[in-house]
Image (cartoon, rainbow, N blue to C red):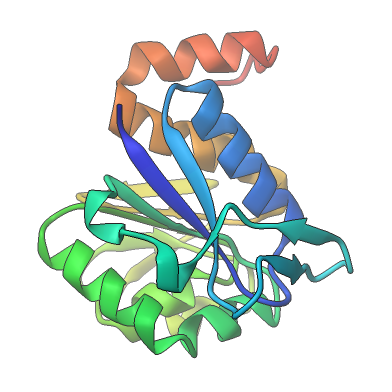
Length: 184
């Protein structure tokens, strides 16, 4: 079974984190929600508290097929400030494995140099953080082992792109149909 980790930092965008984990699970991906804080309970950008499955310190990220960063502010900045997470992202990306970020979170990938020469998208106003990327206003961009999404209203597009990358287009279409998403 394919495995993904969805990371939570204080101030994360709730819709992006929970929506992504849900869609991945519907697509047959073992999606674990991981707190980068020292507590499993993490408060989102809109004051919704979510209990993560595990702490980053307890997660074996070497088993992951995908590492996923939800946006939100200050969540994306807090993800960027997590040295253990950045170390894991560098290792994962270096192995050619999938990394995905939505909304403001592509700033983490941009800061690590992962977007150099790639096509990427992000929430309006964060374009300058996608260092040396060709930035679009598309809902989702897939460039090699990097998937970026524009924002919370596009979480289905983003999540289904990850499902497609991990499980195949047919599975993504089946999940979309089950969600009554006619535009996928």
